[in-house]
Image (cartoon, rainbow, N blue to C red; front, side):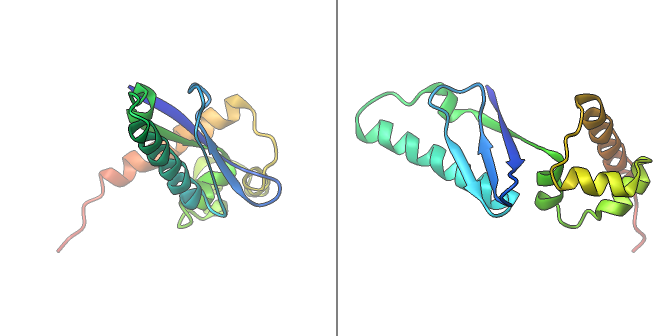
Length: 133
């Protein structure tokens, strides 16, 4: 079973992670997307430990594989080697608009899907690269 975990950037500059489909869902917070992801996983581990210490069965959802999904701003935090302007250019998106998305401006679902598909296409192109040695 996979559980979706959303990592979002907050207007205060911090990040949060939550699993919208889990009961008593763990959360994570941090100053970066990666720190937030680790805090979420630590919270899950601690929740498992509490269940075991109390002699209770650990809910299956706490043993799930987690599928981390990022909003646009969290994406650029999680992968800081991605240059916002050059990524926008490669995807055919206005660079200024992509910078606004990376700072938390609303992004429609359709635009988010277009960006995701473009990033996956870039990744597929990179997988085909061969280096000479």
